[in-house]
Amino acid sequence: MTIVRPPRLKAGDLIGLVAPASTPASRERVQLGVRYLERLGYRVVVGKSAFETYGYLAGTDEQRADDLNAMFRSKEVKAIIAIRGGYGTPRLLGKIDYTAIRRNPKIIVGYSDLTALQLAIFRKTRLVTFSGPMLAVEMGNAIDPYTEEHFWRMITSTKKIGVLQNPPDEPVAILREGTGGGILLGGNFALVMSLMGTPYMPSLRNSTLILEDVDEAPHRIDRMFAQLMHAGILKNISALLLGKFTDCNPADPQKPFLTPNQIFREVAERVKVPVVANIQYGHIEKKLTIPFGLNARIDTKKKRIEVLEAGVE
Image 1 (cartoon, rainbow, N blue to C red):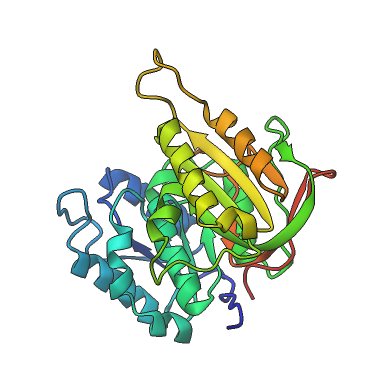
Image 2 (tube, rainbow, N blue to C red):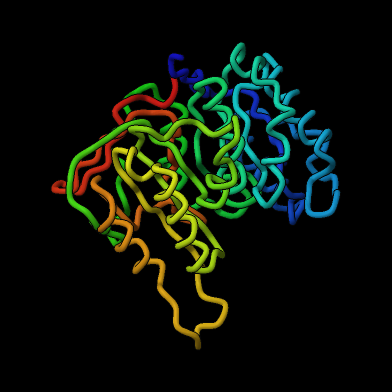
């Protein structure tokens, strides 16, 4: 199936806002995010269930799926941005109208729990999606200029994305030398692993796999890498990129433990592909937007990660 790029976003376009996971923590942050988008010249529509509450979810599965499908089916909505992550997006994957996505491709943005939806969409439709800033997390909270510039350029310009450049004070760490490349896939590590063995997980063969996480104890990170190794995934990828693993600390630091960096270095010793760590991507304010579904090329000698295509058309 051919990879599909969504049409670029233009001034005056309508952006749909959805909460496929948890309820926004603050209505004020949503309002600030809406004003931010409107100041940039976009129109905004908020999903009906965005402020519903069902346990830790923004409404029932049916309500959240209905919101998503309404946005996918709308001819007027040109981009869909998640309000926040949290928990619950994987519950919706069997309720998504993938036919509507294929017929009406558009920009889809989010990260964290949204990883499940983005990987499922790529598996079912081959649509490029964007692991980037969310409305009530970054856009409604004085979005960092580095995050802002990189994100908007990616979804409004039809030029090749080119080099994914860390900030000058955050150099990448080369854990294994080499060159390689393939389709960028991945996202939040725990969500990637939650899709393994399901019909919603795309093949990672010959891919450039990028991973990040937050609030995961080191032993859980270690366990997830062991599963990737035993499943043969790490033998078949073309490159491994590691973003920020934020607040991934042991529950009891008084007991012996491995740090995430120690685990990363062990993984790098076991694979035969280039491994680059400290990518400016993850649960952090200053972040790169990662386009899932596009071809990337890694050259560790040049410390260069390059996306070889445009994200939109």
